[in-house]
Image (cartoon, rainbow, N blue to C red; front, side, top):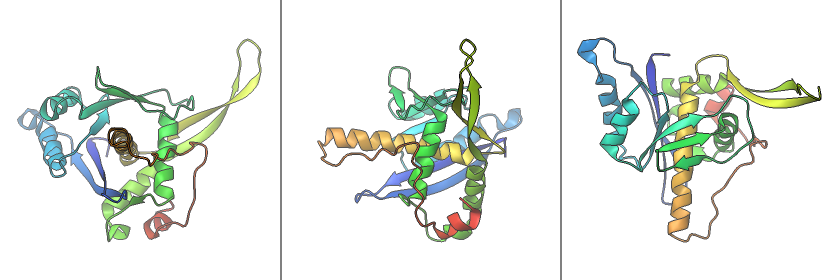
Length: 223
């Protein structure tokens, strides 16, 4: 629902496997008597997992970003700034520690997150095939649209193309997963650097959507 907050929690095991830990939908608070009640529920849900990093939408319900940053401290909470729906093909998530933001090319990061899931890199909990939250998660992904628009240069009148991302309905869980994937990739790169790890962090070509054999729930929901 448009009036709900959507939380996607992901984590990585010691062996490098990535797990989808939880999907949570929390209604937005309505009325003075319930002011900021929803952000308290968000924090309660996050605290179950003691998250190393939290990425939220830049426009997350007014001052809620500041509340999360104050609660968890700088370096753990980042506000995501999404560039135009028209893609420039930039695959890098630009983290800025000075203002606690991360700026992304939306289309590219959506393709990277979706590719990770399609190739089976993200594991779901047992019984997820028949989980209502997973069904909603899949519907949200099915609402994400990648398309190529024709463009014309105003000066030369040369015809070209432009990659664009849009949606045909609610896509909140999909975008929340994109944010979770951003945070996980940041932590993996930091771990690789600080531990002088020899294994490179895998970066998927945004134009190469891998399509391995689908899991049961992916096949059922057409993901």
